[in-house]
Image (cartoon, rainbow, N blue to C red; front, side, top):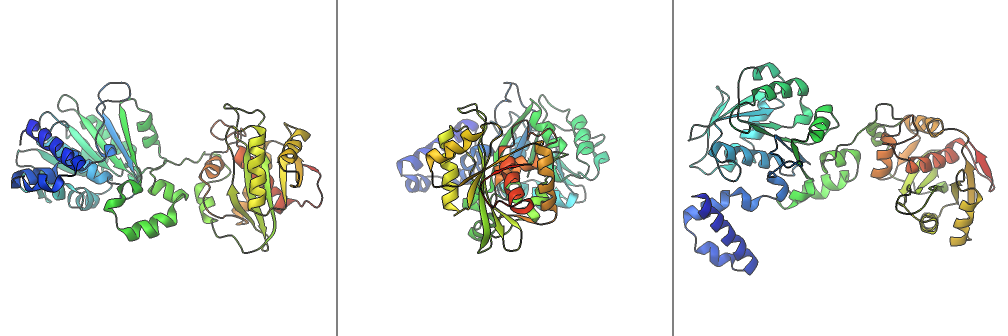
Length: 450
């Protein structure tokens, strides 16, 4: 079917959906036309599963990086891109690409996922276009003569010598010799007018992915697992997705986020994850800590507001991150007093280094019934945080649920006292709370210096 007629058929199908005449439209199609619609990726694909036209700089892209959660449809997107290139299907390719590389973590992965998987190359082709797979030669050969050769990322040297017009790299984030294999592939992408490669992977905070994200010749598509929910088992969504939602592992594996740990940070994702659990039924104390910003308005830092309870087992339980962004004093004061009442806390604990007694005054103006205790820092943020991080190592601090923004700050909190160059307001509030509950006690309102 020619591209012009394919485009017309595609438009007619979409019109029938919009006008509610889909049944009548489908009944009027020939078997060939139905077969085309079934295998026309541009009809079924989401926007993130179709390659962008240009890179951000307006030039043709070299690498299409698809960051997807588990089951988000990234394998299907990669397979459909290779299919279109091998067959010269517009608008993906103007002519067939005769030599293509398929690279996975191992040869077994290439075969089981990229070729023979439910979204792999053999499954997505109609019978008259389907390539033949010869495992002994590690080759897929299309009826038009296009060839895809398979390679293992465990053997970078196998890419020394061959040349290609395109490549599909799957799960780059898991490659053992990622840099070496990637370098060898780049030397081999030298056929045709515009050699290109697609990378389909669940992200991990590794150097090669960071470099690709910064490369102006890379275009990026992102998709969370939830984007492909209609094609996933309901039990998977109800159990696995629900269980890991907003956790470090879930954010990486389901939401396709690249989660960094600073090299010298006091906390790591793994440390926090090991101590995530349920809140006890009773608390000895609950405090709401407030780290007010110096200024207010749109350019102001956030006001850190964290709720932590002391269990009967002498462990601190992080219950809530109620931090508010760029808030006026009355705004963050209302948020802090609301957290106090919602969690039936004992008191508000506010740092007064910047605002002095005005901080307590603002809170009392909003709600004079809330007891306010104040603390003043005499040491740097890093020194105050070190003993709290040690308590995490000892298993004495538990996160009751997931607090993505707080945990991001914790895992990027550096010796400079900043987190990714910004004030660690959430971390400050957390440190004050844990310090108060496990390293110090408040009996009457007064100023503590630490």
